Amino acid sequence: MYNPKSLKAEEFISDEEINETLEYAEKNKNNLSLVDEILKKATQRKGLNHREASLLLACDDKDKVKQMYDLAEQIKKDFYGNRIVMFAPLYLSNYCVNGCLYCPYHLKNKNIPRKKLTQEEIEKEVIALQDMGHKRLAIESGEDPVNNPIEYILESIKTIYSIKHKNGAIRRVNVNIAATTVENYKKLKEAGIGTYILFQETYDKKAYEYLHPTGPKHDYAYHTEAMDRAMEGGIDDVGIGVLFGLDKYKYEFAGLLMHAEHLEAVHGVGPHTISVPRVKPADDIDPNDFDNSLSDEMFYKITALIRISVPYTGMIISTRETPEVREKIIRLGVSQISGGSRTSVGGYAESERPHDTEQFDVSDNRTLDEVVNWLITAGYIPSFCTACYRQGRTGDRFMSLCKSGQIQNCCHPNALMTLKEYLIDYASDDTRKIGEALIEKEIDNITNESLRPKVRDELKKIETGTRDLYF
Image (cartoon, one colour):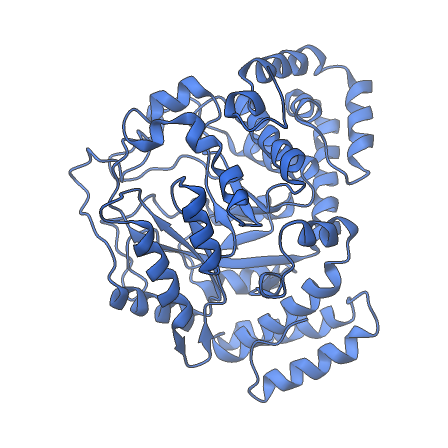
């Protein structure tokens, strides 16, 4: 029985409802008047439900698909402007007790060396990340109650926040660890985390149980209901996502949107972020083992339709994807990207990128400065801002500001100020030159005219050594 307000996984992610949705979409995909009706609704910037969005996904009329892409691009600009938030993953440990068939960290993989960072090693990694210019991290860890207990995660967060090196500081730590208890989510909240991120991998229960044959992650309901426990534990911002390529993409797309609808229905606030990773090569993992691989074009379409359907959410793309794919997908809805990433346990402090403990192959090997330069050249503002989190603009408070468009009054100026910090402290000469020109141009695009002189004053303070200014 489908019920978005239920707290039971099999009721808010209903297999029957998804299959009926896919049948409906297939039956109506050539009904262009209905497609037009849905697209017209989407222009109101209030989102689409999973049935409406699934019909658009099934429609392959070229003119309509172009309309979807154009609308996604415009909605992204309306809610997030031309800002792209920068972050980096930090892998703490690859010890894991699960048997996930798509992840090289699975328990039975004897090829991969197991490693867990000490607090001293974490300090070295964080300094290396600060010296690149990063201000926001997403910490990652395998699930292992002995090697990676919650106490280790909490200690690591405390260490990360404590490190100040030159002008460097990590101002926001997002956490991507296994589903846990309400009590542990309360501890993460008290530790000052930003967003709690957990990928569903697949919403199809049978496929899920097959892909997770052993370990605590095998429990579909416990994993799928994690975000409700996180919110019960006081975490305002949660991030969801599926690993596209594991199972049928149309099913995953509908399930992902149903999860967003569920969070909105129960908690009054949808996902702060939605990630769109695809299965990629890694040690002991061959993407060809999964027969649901996603073409680039369908990947773009899914991204565009997530942006149209959940217009307020932040969308994340990782360095799993090539620079060419990332360039196209940013235009269609992505608002956060990683830069200079290393997906091994440790490695930022080393000059050569290590591969022995990587969770997946990195397809975009550019440095953070090269990524920042590329974004500026393309007309985007690379943003290192973490102000909303520290100003209490999280959860429903962030969403109300985002949905009304008022968030632009904070985010645009803050993006410029954090970019200014980056340019002075870390950028190459060429990046600094083009970045300064972008800032000067973008000051005139601040919609609140009274803010412009204030922003100029703050930029002058940054030039004379002040750091961490924000509205």
